[in-house]
Length: 151
Image (cartoon, rainbow, N blue to C red; front, top):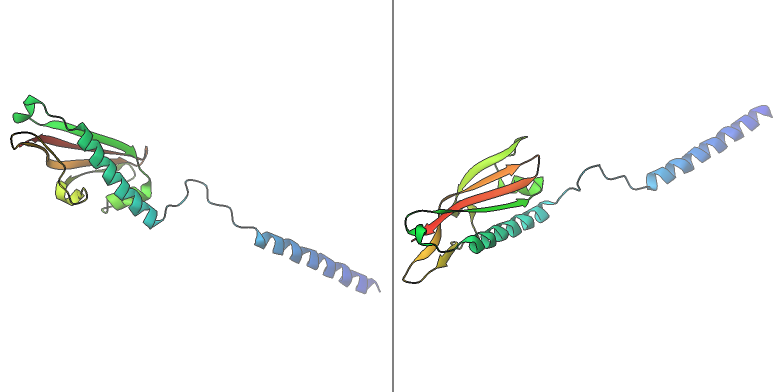
């Protein structure tokens, strides 16, 4: 009889452990610490939004001044950008410090339209040269700068 009682107690303990494990298995896993993962589609959408914001910021900074006939002025833009979005902007990869690169205006593809502002007498303000892109992985900030002049 003592053996039967031991077996019964062992069976009850096993049944209790099975219930506990079943309850633990039904709990969803905790998210990993840190920022939530961004899907590729969201990152691509953010890149498109970012390029549009850069274009609008540059357009709002372009202003005529008489000195533009002989020289150029600098345009700047900075914004916080997630790592996944930065990976899409810099296909060459990110270093631990960040990335600094230059892109042709055509490569940067400001939605296929040249960023210009028309002036009187067949003149216009246009981007010239290259667009400079800098991304810091520590601060997660993107800085974009370019030069514009009068044609």
